[in-house]
Length: 506
Ligand SMILES: Cc1cc2nc3c(=O)[nH]c(=O)nc-3n(C[C@H](O)[C@H](O)[C@H](O)COP(=O)(O)OP(=O)(O)OC[C@H]3O[C@@H](n4cnc5c(N)ncnc54)[C@H](O)[C@@H]3O)c2cc1C
Image 1 (cartoon, rainbow, N blue to C red):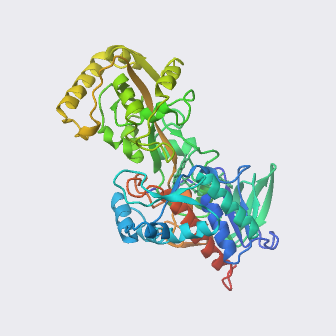
Image 2: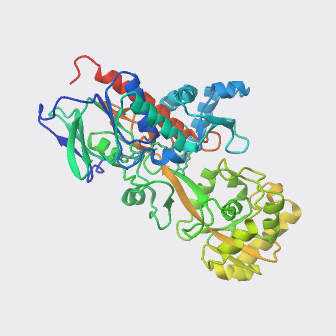
Image 3: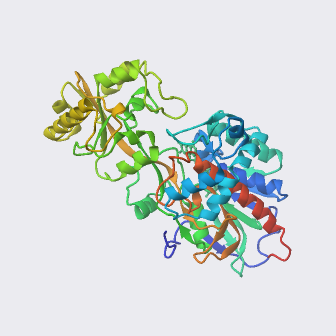
């Protein structure tokens, strides 16, 4: 876990203001960020009786929450109706084992325990779910699929918040905190239409969604060069504002450098998002490294985090997905082995693959190439033809024997490459968000390195560290990022509302 020492420079500042300089509070609680953590926090604080202002940096609400497909929960009514017996204890154990017990188990426990109640809370607010399913093979059924995806949930949360009197202000980035002579929080500095204004408050909930667009921090904490060998998906303006603000107030740092990684192929602006070609390229076919050698059991294709982690090693140069006409026919006639989000499910037949593949290969992009021989393909991939030919020959032998001596891939995915045409698509390491920054306790209160509470300061969502130790746990707990954001937001909202009512507080 990272130390915050020496990382409190630049950007937001904690502005010291003389007592009495900030006018009487119009808000008890201010929420920084209008994604799922911020909206849930604002609503919960309001429901607990606080006057709440939510400040959102962008023109519209939702952040990456707009893209959420499914929310993890255990012991929900929907699961009980479907006789799904998976328990909170089992989920906690699986999550903590995945993270080698490096994370904040007390917080994870609370977040998992309140996941079912949060599904019910969302349903009461008008959020609809189409069912509970798995997102990864052999996983417990914990993935609550949102009707209308995250956008629908964001709309419902915002509607409810406005109806209950939350003052929501978009295009209003928080640029700093205001503190009194005692160092305690007095309010925030916000920029609206280019002008700074000071807003007093009793408590601040930080929910600014991480630092996925902060090149400097991505380099410092992960070693990657953003937009060169690592690409963020769906994040805009995530510069770590809330994390920096909290550190400047004295918060501890935790979990910096943890990313929600996956592998996307083909990669490049010229390729349409979620096309049939992308669906074909993420299958457990043949994957090779920048030298043209296999580097993993491609059966991990079903587990996004594992694919991202396996590709992450190849920081310089990209990995490739290689297939042929034989496999193409398989995807058209038999269907896909793995699905792509909840829209394209396993077994889906890619009827338009032939036509789309022809069209995209014709673009002449280095991201997707074809040839009538393995050696010819290698030349276009800028890979040594003898290495790729040896890899394909060895792979085909494994397919004939039904046994992969290198990585023990499940024989049902061992399908030889015979041509007549061969295809290769560049695969890139991408990430959906950062998962760390601010150290918090089990009440989502911000704490320093020694776990001393910073009065009036709370945090939730992707700004919070200490839950995911090394990488996002997707195998058994797919959808837990949004659960942690929603439940953490609610907890922060409730506790901040209670804090501002505490007799004798400043
Ligand atoms: C493509 C994609 C698909 C995903 N699918 C899933 C899924 O199916 N299930 C799942 O669990 N998770 C999923 N996630 C992850 C999920 O979206 C996040 O974990 C979750 O949204 C985090 O919530 P948050 O509130 O912390 O951040 P966000 O929801 O991103 O909200 C943060 C908000 O803070 C605002 N902000 C930033 N700086 C400031 C500032 N200075 N002042 C005011 N506001 C500021 C941002 O503009 C943003 O609106 C997905 C992510 C992506 C990108």
